[in-house]
Image 1 (cartoon, one colour):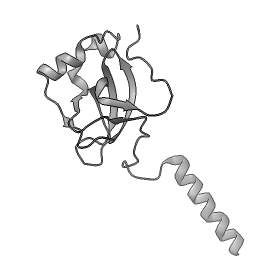
Image 2: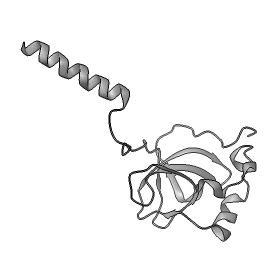
Image 3: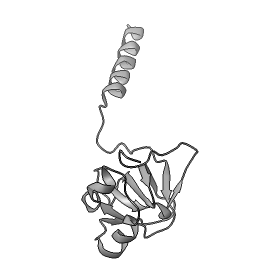
Image 4: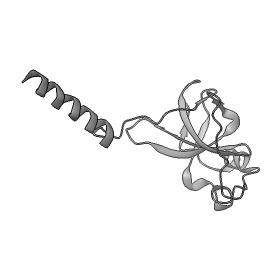
Length: 128
């Protein structure tokens, strides 16, 4: 009887792990960190298709810093973030920006990020 119960608990734990029986608050694994407080994260739609889709991102980070409205600014150096792609001086980032339980995707200056580990990050866009 005890063995059957223990086996049932193990099966339930494995099923929960496999099928994601948790909340949306599971953090994405961070492969980078903000280098300082105040690094701005711009909304997903702030970057045009020429960068997002094609990979032509030269000068986009500077243009965002000059003219776009940031959705979030890092609160401290070392704050974890996931970089999903990088082109020129722009990085697509994923994290819990602004408090809350929702994972948000946005864009940040790659110069404001410190990569962790040696895993390569793919270039943004299809033509790069």
